[in-house]
Length: 363
View 1 (cartoon, rainbow, N blue to C red):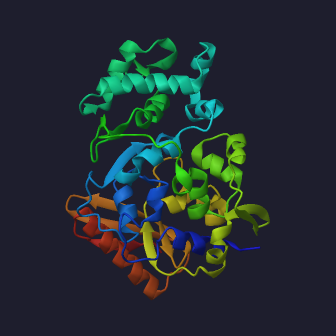
View 2: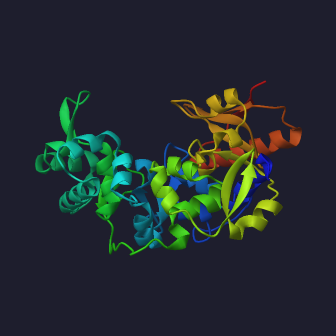
View 3: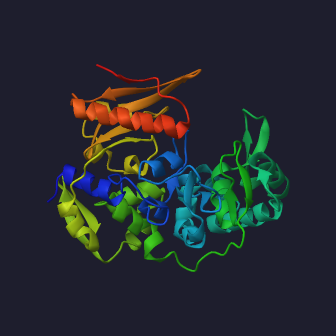
């Protein structure tokens, strides 16, 4: 039996949120992908793990639409294994991941994986040079039949369904150019999909290694995959532990780390940091009201992590030349903790290349 603090300490250590320096090569979260959503996205997530991102370039990293169709950052050298790892496990899995796009395909007698291959083939043919997403979508609408398309009322136009479009991109050997909005797609130079992802990039093992202990359902929810498919691929080298009365699995190799982890340090986690992506939210934040504050339907804040526990939320406020970090503590913070939070806010301001005006601690 283990308690939530042991679980959180283990994850802080596994995700290297307690280190001051690191490299892309030894940053573990890049094995599962670092979500790049919002101004404090993947680069900030790497910076909080000690990586110098000031000179980060597309020669070292690659941005792909992968898990849940979200953009994730990876090491460029790993792309072949990553693409193998994030592919749907089965046709049923593909249908679940593409959401409402599966219904018209089924009605037309088109298998979901075959549909992804069809979209990928046409996408690769379209993207012979860097191409804006809207142009790619427009070209696809002229070559793909009706089951692949939907009418968009806001645009008053017909588009290819969004999730097949996103999930087919990596399948087609396409990446997203860094720092482009709207997104620009281009071919991955020398792309070759690996035959298997290998243990390091296997998404189920990576989840257990970085967000364990966990249940098959929690992993399935993270991937948007059917529980049946995840259970069928559950690793054999796991041990069972009990967290808050719930049986969960942990890779046997991590048993000692779970028992001994003792997290120290303060971090301002971005809204989509991997630490906050775990699907056992009641373990992360047991209080229901605080959980709603951290994970609202729209406009997520970041989270304040102090010595292995989440102790509040934070939001950036920029107006003209002023940049303030507003902190909402969930408990009384010691003077040392407030100084550490302020230091992290200064680090965030430097990361954004703006001077910090103030850190506003709500009473």
